[in-house]
Image (tube, rainbow, N blue to C red; front, side, top):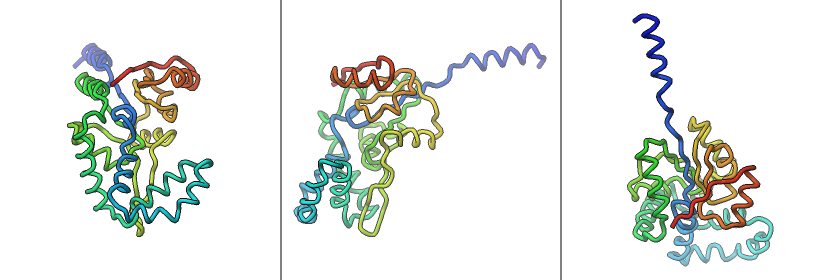
Length: 232
């Protein structure tokens, strides 16, 4: 091959468009509500023993609530998963995922259609969520989206049961993406100000079902007008 052919081949190679990377939050975008909250709530609803377990903590929880809702939520999660080993938790998460998918109204049909259109267009779609890995992975699998890349929160096994390990929210989403080898993305969908770190680097950030007040806050946080999506 002469230098002319080599130059021609190089030009063809550079003309191939790079694959677009598109990020989706899960809770509030693909799902109406918070999947892990619903799972934990179901744990208490199905076991009076777990309700009794958390009763002695109630005075402390009420005192903490005005100062740290996250600490209160963490305590309730740990109590709900007390004595639950990793394999048992995985099985329970898969079972609950199957139950959730039976309730189609929980899911945002427009968001799911948009995600599938991105897949059909050849985009690299990644769900980046604060929801727990096994639970959200089970839900996506039940929805026929098991092949979608997933970056989620993770629990860790302890002698007392499953505990919160890596919480994939806020700036932690950037850490998860970097560890996954993703350093740039073209589009990102979210419904929350918590996702400003993920939305800011996107060429096309999209706020899903944002109120006028939230839209203004997001525009200020990003320093530009964010795209809007009204999905049901």
